[in-house]
Amino acid sequence: MSEEEICSQFIRLLRLQRNDFINHLQVVHALIQLGRGEKALRYIEEVSKKIESVDESLYQYQEQAVK
Image (cartoon, rainbow, N blue to C red; front, side, top):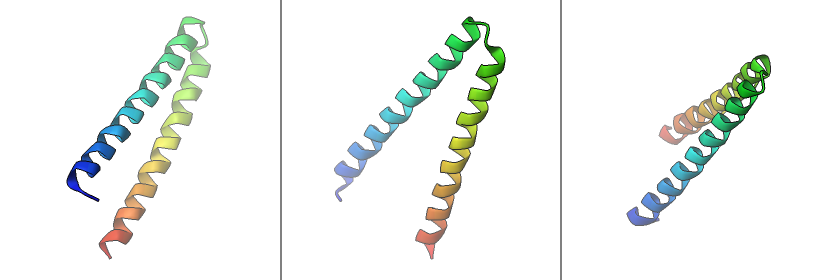
């Protein structure tokens, strides 16, 4: 893969991540506006757990790539 392809792929992934983040913020915002603060907190906790899971997977992948 060329450097240009890697950069394009990286930019695409950043855009996807940005869109996901905005969607999550919109959900939390809507829940709070509807007076569903407890549900908003649970949603944030769920999203945080998913992010931690991805982080853990990336760390494991990186560790194996180094070996």
